[in-house]
Length: 354
Image (cartoon, rainbow, N blue to C red; front, side, top):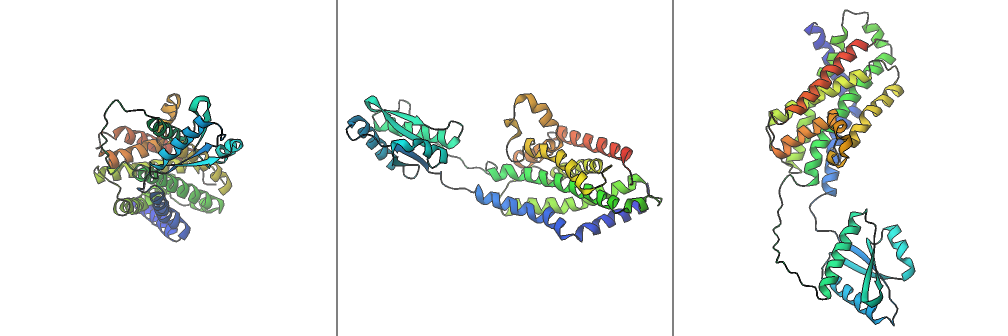
């Protein structure tokens, strides 16, 4: 491999990238817009108000009237935590179907109540617990255990703190695979690779130039997103920055190898688009970008944990939020290195110029 040839090829990839405003926008600007939007959506705010619907009782049913009056008064005493409104008896189903109330409360014989809600909706379960608690207290129930509450707010526990490492990992994966796969297939489609094949340039020099150019932009990409997170969103970076950059660079190289593999035989943009989506879509869902990967069943956890994006996101998240060192993220690094070596080796073997 000749370094001068590799240098010129990498410089060519660099110039091609900065001459495409769309690529610059999706690589640097779009992640910032997404992080900012989610920070606004999940900013610190007061607990949301629960809305419950009280089914109107017959005027002659004095027990039901007393129960509804007690519940209405108790809801008013909760401040903004619970708001009750009365509905006709035949509209309970409509209220739940349209989601205009999280809970419907009806009355039963003897002053009892009936709760109607969807147990799969968190707001329905929360409204049921809160309503039952204030109603039982209003009707004389006393707590038997004294309780003291200590509320704690700590950096790193917000959703934006959880999401930003996932966003960084997803951006590294997307920009690495898309930029390499589309760049190579576009050149093959335009017959440019056929001309390059006539030069002394080797496959390794050509493919490595894409990976190296990707790593050059990665430094700027990571710096922009981490700087925005730390300075604007107050997201903590508790681990060592060199360790964080090492994981990010190895992750970018691993996904770059996957991008080379994806584009090694494809001839058209449509074909490589389908393969790229097929490769990335499962990782968007299962790798813990938007929510914890531990939410998936234990039976598929070995597959989930073996995905390269899961390794990258877990490594970045451990360093940023838990202050993990190099030894703690070594399993994730080794997995990413395995994807890098295997992906590059297979891409070199099956790559074709035309």
